[in-house]
Image (cartoon, rainbow, N blue to C red; front, top):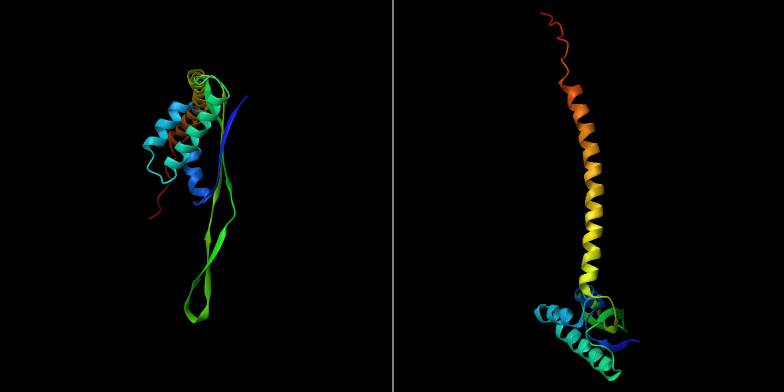
Length: 159
């Protein structure tokens, strides 16, 4: 079961909206709200309002509010309005006024602590593999140094 909220025709380019929306997927509602409260972007209050709407939809469906996570936050491109700006010598440049369609989907998910523990384990595995590769490269470097330190034969100098 999931709760959903959409906003259509938001007058800001999807590229700018995705900058903030990209980091919210997988977070709990409270954590996402705190991130949006402190974000200095124009879209932050709009996403916060949309998140609250999805939360209200979940409450109407009698879902467990504690286990809800943002499972999907998609920012799609809406229709583009074209305007013309007059330029020199009778020319005109096109101005594109882009719009966005934003969708938030909430569903019950794992707790964040479990996800964080999995991430820590993954990082530890990658670090151990990095250590193995770096120790092998150190050995190769030591062999090169030994070759370089080998005594060189003196060349006869002609006078």
